[in-house]
Structures are given as C-alpha cells and as structure tokens.
Amino acid sequence: MPKLKTKSGAKKRFKLTGTGKIKRKSAFKSHILTKKETKQKRNLTQTSYVAEVDKKSVLRQLALR
Image (cartoon, rainbow, N blue to C red; front, side):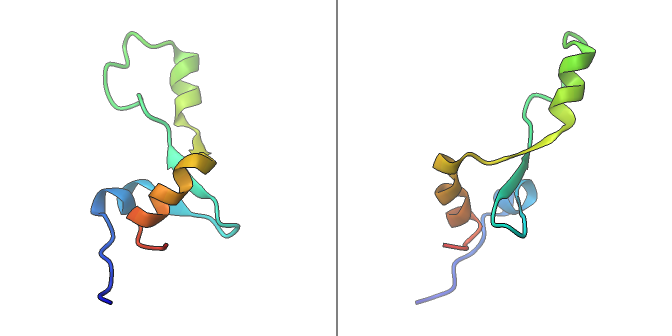
C-alpha cells in the first residue's frame, strides 16, 4: 500500500502534543477585529484542543491513522 500524503492545510493548522492531544488555534481572529471587544480578542489568542469527535478526522488528514 502506498504512503499517504498529509493534507498541507492540516499540517499548518494542527500540532500533536506528547500526550496525543491535538492543539489548534481559535477561529475568528484574522480580520474584522474592530467590532470585537478587547476581552474577546484576548480570549481568542489562546490555543485549545481539538474535540474528541473531530480527532479521528484530523489524524486522518495528518496521515497518522
């Protein structure tokens, strides 16, 4: 069976942690920031983890499963 290629969009957006979780950045922080509160923008800066229901899909995109 041939090797699977990694989706190039996924490899830019996700990082795997040592414990097997997948880190991601929050959405809605790229443009149209003038109408958003400072508190909201600050909270969107933090990284979070991919939900368990989406984990299988992301791992498949990263060619790990």
